[in-house]
Image 1 (cartoon, rainbow, N blue to C red):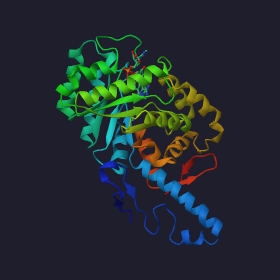
Image 2 (image 1 turned 90 degrees about the vertical axis):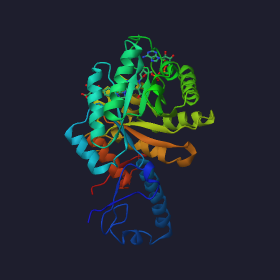
Image 3 (image 1 turned 90 degrees about the horizontal axis):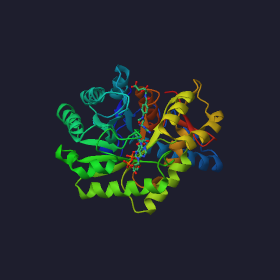
Image 4 (image 1 turned 30 degrees about the horizontal axis):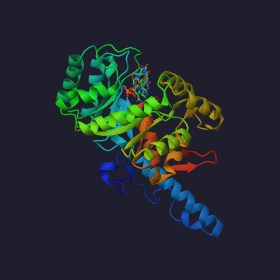
Length: 345
Ligand SMILES: NC(=O)C1=CN([C@@H]2O[C@H](COP(=O)(O)OP(=O)(O)OC[C@H]3O[C@@H](n4cnc5c(N)ncnc54)[C@H](O)[C@@H]3O)[C@@H](O)[C@H]2O)C=CC1
Ligand SMILES: Nc1nc(=O)c2c([nH]1)NC[C@@H]1CN(c3ccc(C(=O)N[C@@H](CCC(=O)O)C(=O)O)cc3)CN21
């Protein structure tokens, strides 16, 4: 038997399906093993702590969302096998790629049964009409109702929009029936924007969304170590911002690829800390996984508010989907470096 079971908590919040393995508990241990490990008081308490940690990591991971620039056949197959239909799949917009290519991926995500959330990088559009046409096509052909609004990486705007808030306040999104937006958060800061500017921009965007009838959530830039995420989230919550936060994680991907993307995306500090820790990355294929960052966020639990993982699939969407599904099923072994590894089925 390899029956799929719905997770115990709210189905709408838990897109990653848990797999039930026959003759084993939900952590993949054979029946009876848990009993055997509780033979002394010390072992018993170690075991409980380990179980609690694994359960909290699995519960957080069951709410994962994904992001991609393309949808290959293998990616669609991995989604179909492991991720509940209707789960949000964000489609990034790279300045080097034509808008039509993003529309194609958005349509493919919808056709596969998932909820496409396109990035709208406002600096990339030469006119409000160009942005409006692009959005209208995605609404019409792919039923888009949510978008991620960002300025984007251009140092100078191609048209009238310089910052994300200008699009939010324009009413254009609302006119196309968009009801929810994501905006960017930066736990590691931004190479060209000061921290205080980022803080003010985030608060202003969330206020503008509320005032113009849009639900809003935050999607963070990816971070390769847990410490900046926890510090940033703690600061955010102390400011009274209690919006849902999707925390960006990168991988699984080769260490080389991750460091390259860190450079492209401007997460230098985190990449340096990560590189120092590369000796601790023990996956057999030289693949880096965000296990330390995931465990660091799952640990503090409710204290960080409504948080969920968001995967930037730099090593391919299929790999990210499979890794997160294994973690959501509790198929992991904790390690002494503060992370964990996925165990074989
Ligand atoms: N977090 C993510 O998933 C993604 C982030 N980006 C990032 O979008 C950044 C900014 O977008 P938002 O957070 O939406 O900012 P925003 O639109 O809320 O603007 C905040 C402040 O930063 C300035 N700013 C924005 N983009 C800039 C740029 N490229 N160069 C210099 N100053 C800039 C704005 O003028 C404004 O003062 C880009 O530089 C890029 O790093 C791009 C794609 C995805
Ligand atoms: N500063 C910044 N810019 C971004 O565009 C960005 C972020 N940060 N943070 C997270 C996501 C992830 N982003 C990226 C950035 C680069 C590629 C990229 O270079 N991809 C490869 C393969 C893409 C493909 O072929 O489909 C490429 O060669 O374009 C992908 C996603 C987009 N987002």
